Length: 142
Image (tube, rainbow, N blue to C red; front, side, top):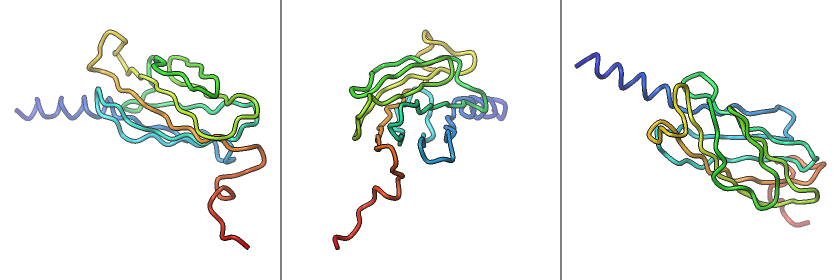
């Protein structure tokens, strides 16, 4: 039975998501919680609307995702995907909340293996150019 437990632990680790924050310049930040196989989780993205994309990449078990499928597109921006990442670019002039939904597949998995993937609903906050997250917090009235 110890071998069975070891295999189960290895499988659980292989599908654990670890989102990497994209940049230290505060123009784009992402946070993605741990996801179990087949689970849907909510991630956050904060991006300055400067015409550049904010990229979300996930690693499953230390390896990049092998494919992504866009399940719901944002209302106020453009979303593109590659095998291992999605890129969100807000529409010109847009500031506010947006959202999208992506399904991720890991090593040796694919769109036809529904039990070997997970979904991420991403809540996006788009800030105006020239702002940073700290300046958007509530300040007392003068």
